[in-house]
Length: 395
Ligand SMILES: Cc1cc2nc3c(=O)[nH]c(=O)nc-3n(C[C@H](O)[C@H](O)[C@H](O)COP(=O)(O)OP(=O)(O)OC[C@H]3O[C@@H](n4cnc5c(N)ncnc54)[C@H](O)[C@@H]3O)c2cc1C
Image 1 (cartoon, rainbow, N blue to C red):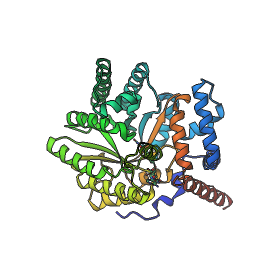
Image 2 (image 1 turned 180 degrees about the vertical axis):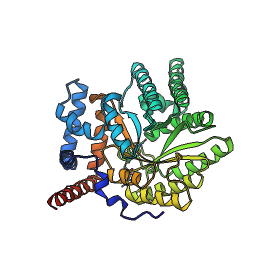
Image 3 (image 1 turned 120 degrees about the vertical axis):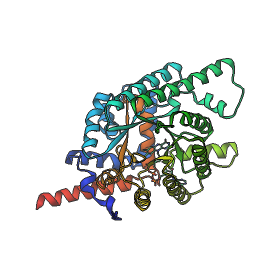
Image 4 (image 1 turned 30 degrees about the horizontal axis):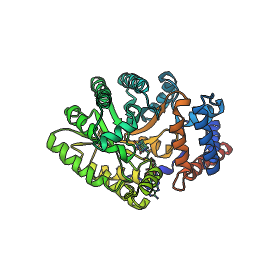
């Protein structure tokens, strides 16, 4: 099997599920999101509205929310999931609520995610559930654990409850045969999370892969960490589950490092990040026997390369051990063409109350606005498909 270098240029399959109106709407959205000033002002206004408990505009739901999210409830997500399933695309479900700080919120996240795992257990199009660790623990507590500072008696209990929440989620996932991915976050809490996931993997990933960690390849220390993790998994006799991403917090990481005068944990340029991302994919595929890999990226070159590397190593494109994933609302040309070529393509699909998902949506808008963002590429593909449809109608 050969993969054509222009596989991701096929806009007909990329946008097959989108009506002409939906395409025009996406075009308008990406045109606005490409405007730096608008996104900055819009993000501040949205955060202010959230703080003041103001109602969210229905226009916001109809545009930004609908484009990047599955719905407010499982019922609302079902239509989206079915449409993806029809195109051979699976779903990584994510309860998109972020930036919470109270025990009540963390327990609510536990309940919501348990329901999501149960939903995935009976809805096989949902291949995994993604968890944002700070939805279950206070950032300040995680920071203290990472620094190995002495915890007060109350904090020790709090940390125990955090670990219990993840333990419970792994138990449900194990019973329901659903995989869990823990998202990666900021470096000043990530070691604490890494240690916790490593310990969970060593217990739950013996017969199959239940729980996976995420590696941010914009960090210059991650290839060494990956090699060390593979060694430990082999020696310990458990599967290593890894989602590979480039990383979403580059600006805050660099700002904090400069402010606090320590070496930035982020590579100095994108070329180095790209090289490490592709290298990490190769290392995981080389140890395919022990490693479950999720190639999580919209980057066309990295996706094409990973698909070819799989074929070169004679790894079945449909193996459950290698999954590709793009964020819902982005990189459709990658996802749908990958599925058509017979690979395990998925969408990372956030859901949840409109107001609560705002921080996630702001991150997506900012990602698209940044110089390295992909608005231009998304717009070009949409325009190409609009043109193609017009031409076809004229025939
Ligand atoms: C399924 C899925 C799950 C994800 N889960 C997580 C997660 O758990 N944690 C997380 O942090 N992110 C996560 N992300 C987001 C991800 O980290 C990227 O921000 C996003 O996917 C864009 O990267 P890319 O590989 O798709 O594309 P590209 O456009 O090729 O890369 C953009 C990325 O390159 C890096 N970059 C850009 N410019 C520079 C520069 N000058 N110097 C150094 N690096 C640079 C940044 O990481 C930037 O986000 C996820 C993404 C996907 C698709």
